[in-house]
Amino acid sequence: MTLESPSIIDVAKKAGVSVATASRVMSGSTYPVSDGTREKVLIAAKELHYVPNSLARSLKAQRSKLIAVLVGDNADPYFAQVARGVEEVANAHGYLTIICNTERDPDRELSYLQTLQDYRADGIIFTGSGSDETSVPEQLEIDAMVEKIQRRGAAIVILSPHSIQAPSIQPDNLGGAYELTSYLISLGHKRIAFVTGPGNVTVANQRLHGYRQALTDSGITPDDTLLLPGNFTQAGGERAAGMLDQFPREKRPTAVFACNDETAFGLMYGLRQRGWRLPEDISICGFGNLPMARMVTPSLTTVNIALRELGRAGAQKILTLLQHQETPTQETFPTTVVKRASTIPLEHTAGVQQ
Image (cartoon, rainbow, N blue to C red; front, top):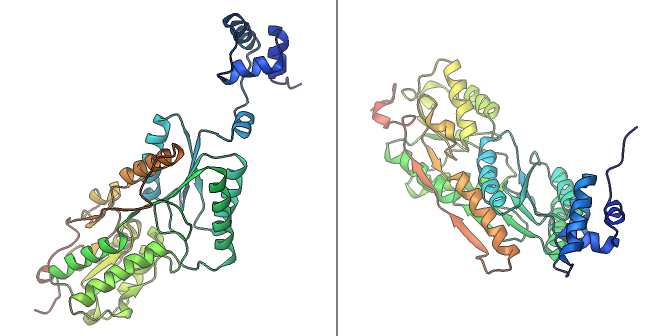
């Protein structure tokens, strides 16, 4: 038989006080209670092994000391780094951090938001990008739920492009992609392929736009035959490697810009499996600067976002909002190109006609 946990009523009965008095003592209320009465309640609670019901208290107080981090894929090191930064700041201020894996599915995102509303989450951080398809029913429902949560007094911050209206800190995806493409061009590369992200994800399209703009500004006409479909995963990068291998030798690109580091890792593996030498046969770069980027061979040229610091900044913004202090509505998080061994000048690339 399962024994029920003691309730606040049991504590009050054992201490010989009212339930209201026992509740005030155990909740840490500022309501005046004599030292003698407080001691009796605490002794009774200890003897009964009473554990306060945190959920019940949060429902009453409209505060849960809970911050939720919505991620697109909890297996993706990008989101793991951001979430780690959030957790460091949130936990230091007494908040519990939970990770909600949406799998980039609007229905799952909406379901999480409803649950977090029910549990009175104090803060919600969107780390993944929203959809470009802002008129779809699911996205409209998400927008409406966010407004409902904000009206309750919870704080919401977005760390990637999203349709919802909330304070944001966003990496310079377009600028970072522009600078990385410009770096490849400075090495002499003109036929630069691009492995895309999911077609309806805003951040992927921002990086694609930066790539195309850099080509155009350098007098290079973007070639859509050099756009290879990807989905932000290593598997997507491996599939892109197979597509590259099908190019006639005279039309092969001399460099490839993968939309994120995970894609670049898969691309590198897939090309090696097909006998390509890196970077002798083709230069490769990514976006994100995951810890593994400097450990792979050759080390990966990429765009650094300082993901952990981005998460820390997001958590700090949540705390600032909860304290009703002023904070910028929109902030841009800087990006920088990290030059490593996976990219070389065109003149050193094998098989290139000078």
